[in-house]
Length: 121
Image 1 (cartoon, rainbow, N blue to C red):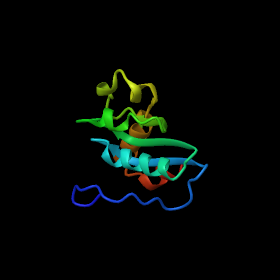
Image 2 (tube, helix red, strand yellow):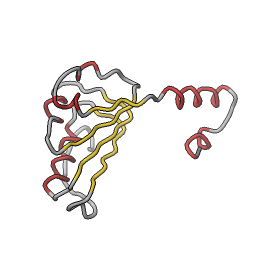
Image 3 (cartoon, rainbow, N blue to C red):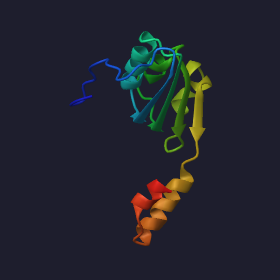
């Protein structure tokens, strides 16, 4: 993605017969993740799993991500995935509790502690 435009479909490394794990910071419209799923599936990935810190699922994300190749999608509870209450993607969705990490980050900031150390813990 550059200047808001999604391009490219290159997969670095061999995924044929392997588990592809896709990590993203945020899923908004789902275009980037959908293209990555397609690229991995086209190259023969045995399983495709995805995770993102924040799942907004705006616009047509639900439709874009309703791909049989996507086995599981994990997000944190930073944004409630209310747009995915039913349907194909919601059945594959796992929502993880991120409150302890956020609370610990706030505590460390308040006490002039290290956020880098939090990432290393």
